[in-house]
Image 1 (cartoon, one colour):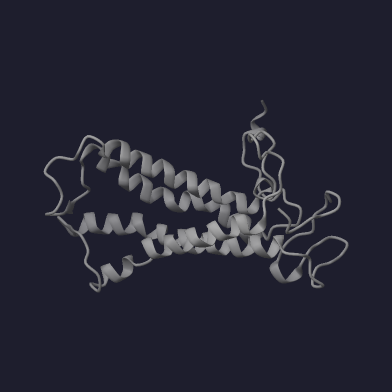
Image 2 (cartoon, rainbow, N blue to C red):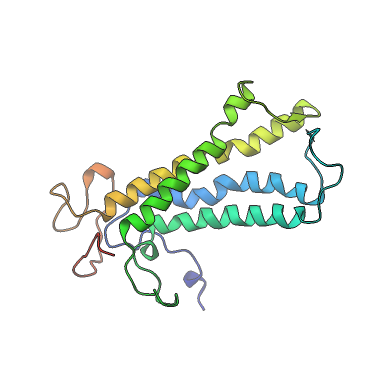
Length: 208
């Protein structure tokens, strides 16, 4: 199989995707990667300088599976977000059992994305309040460990806003065409999208 077939195909949608949305979707797995890597040492009970009096003296047997699984899940969810800028986010791939080849109803993608984005904002974007002393924060053995934790965790605060921005762009793209779009190309100067040079026939945007 050619290597190009293994790469994620982005922007192969019925209507053009804004360039900024494709760039954000490509960047997201790398945005959350520092947090995933920072978390991994906890799998072998190395606590990265954290001081938590409530933590058990020895980590339970399931902690390695939990920590590694959580990091893998984080990257998987970040990759799943690329569906908001991909053709498979509009039509289920044909190899998927039972539902392959069916169109994705816009709200079936938008609602989970918005709820997930809001949950991520609530989960990560409150860290600055803890760093400012407004909310409680786990202590560290020295300032270097604390600085490393903040550097690695800070990019994850962009995860929720990026998902919300991609959900908004997806909704705009999938809603019925308005008079602001060019009938010949489907390009909309307002959102910075590029014209689709490969039309795919009649569109049935907005139907499940």
